[in-house]
Image (cartoon, rainbow, N blue to C red):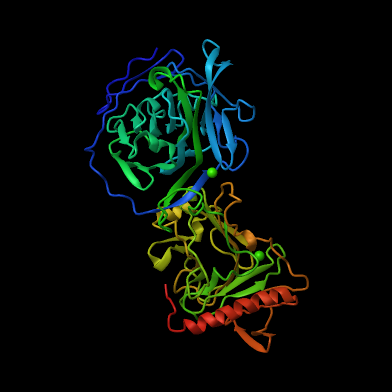
Amino acid sequence: MKAKLPTIASSLRLRAQTAKHTIVRNFLIIIISSIFPLQASTAGWTQQWIDSFDGNAVDWNNWTAQTQADYNNEVQCYTADDFSVDKNYDVSGGTLTIIARRQFIDCPHAPLGDRTWSSGRLNSKDKREFLYGRLESRIRVLDTEGGSWPAFWMLENQIFEQPIKGDGSDNVNWPNPGAGEIDVWEWFSNNGGSYITNFFNRSPGCSSGNVVTYTYNANDVTDWHDYAIEWDADVARFYIDDTLVRTQNLSSCGQYEEPMFVLLNVAIGGSLGGKIDSGLSLARMEIDYVAHCTATSSNSATRCNQSTPGAAQNLFIFADFERTDWAAWDSSGGTIPMQVVDSDMTYGEVMEFDIVGSTVVGFTSRAPFASGGVPYDASGVVNTATLEFDLKMTALPTTGATDWRLKVESPAAATEAVVSLTSSLEGHLAPELDTWQHYSFNLADLATLGLDASAIDLVLVFPEFGTGDGAAFRLDNVKILTNVAQNPATTDNTANDTGNAFVPGSGGGGGSPGLLLFMTLGGLIIARRARRRPCIQQSNILPGLRILRGSIMRLVLRISSISALLRV
Ligand SMILES: [Ca+2]
Ligand SMILES: [Ca+2]
């Protein structure tokens, strides 16, 4: 038997647990109305995960049926049944309905075996866990007779509850640090005119509960509403639709600073669900979606749902052809980077940059240099993502570069990070002449240096400013990899990553004496001049057309921006 909980500041709610670490959810709720409000965040949201329940069964990649959850003398038996005629999870028509049924059921996990109700309880433990951001669900209740207790809530991921990994990492009893609880929405049909938001924990400075009265009393819960929490280390805010109903200062709270998982369940009766109305035979909670978003400065989304911009996908800035929305660029405008075919068929088409005087070069998605560029939002993957590229120096600086740099910026150079190439994960000392080297950098390290990872629009690689004159080098496979599973439902920008398309007969690179490339299309003649080491050999029409397309775009851009060259 667990010891009785110590008093939690500003909470009158007490809990005890049985010998089987079950939670007795006993409650007295007070409204805490005087917590000082903190300023609302100004961020938009990036969708990191959503279950829209569009299939015909529970997606067990997201959820575990928590069948071993016998708490508070509740009468239901939780099952994993999403398929039988008496199923407790009905996924159809784009929603999940958790159905509590009045029925006799042999319950293998229950202390006494037999139960008079079946029901459902899903949790996302070890599958979908969240540290901060916005967690949102659209929910309605279909049956309002007394005795049911549906909820949308979270627990910290070290809690000793199913699923138990057995490696000792989830052995904390509720609600100790690691096993705290936050209730985003829980509704007691025996008190149906309101719902409750709650914190349960053992840390001082983390407050207790709050009652939210429905505008239209119990009828309101049968309408669709969006219930959400937004939280970070210092503050938690609870919403119904567009209405902020609760702001909780967490700045002196020692819990809720580790990942939490989400739960959806319908409990019946017991010490909290209360008296079961004789007319209640089904107690149904319908859920349209559950979604988690992280804060971003790259949009102004206020909700976290199907319409919220999705999480970052891998970004291929250059692999085998120049993107119109990520243009190769010389900040001084003195040269035009050239797409060439490298002698090493592993790389195929690459981008060559020449350093003339003092300049920096790389790729930009900014207008007018790029067309239709959108800053890349890596905010949701900043802790896993890497920025990578391959580099081969083809001509040494005449005076000897003092260092080679990677510089990444957000729009208007509002934020930036500059690192030496010698700090790459591979540990190369410096670029080497006529040798391809792979360079990788953790985005988290760049963010630590000040880069706003939610809006990356400039990636530059160059000999340190003023020391690189005469250098020429090639970049290929310039990319940001999220290093997390990609969501096929969101826009795929991997079209550029078609492999390193070697063009047969294109010859070797690096030694050709040609100075001008002339190509014609419809009588238009474009001259592309490289001031140093031009080396275009194109015998295949498709690469030629690609370059011509880029040339036309660049010519237009150069004309339109002749007076607006941006020096960094
Ligand atoms: Ca849905
Ligand atoms: Ca390539």
